[in-house]
Image 1: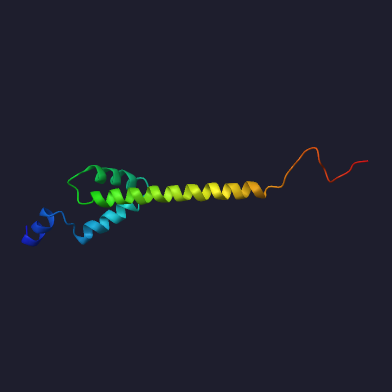
Image 2: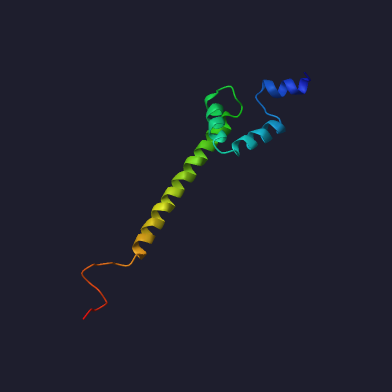
Length: 93
């Protein structure tokens, strides 16, 4: 093994191709969550901080989506016309 490669592995740095594969794996649905859990649980893995940060960003996005969902549901319900069954515009003779 070359000295430069040993230095990268001993101090926890990752090479470019390792980061490329990390990003490819996090782009695959379901696999990304499994791999992020594995990386976040492994204290010796250099991807640990990346996995924890990704979980924080995912949680923030889910919360923001939920807030927007609630806001748009409230707006949507308020736009529904009032349908009172005792009142009618049509008259039957």
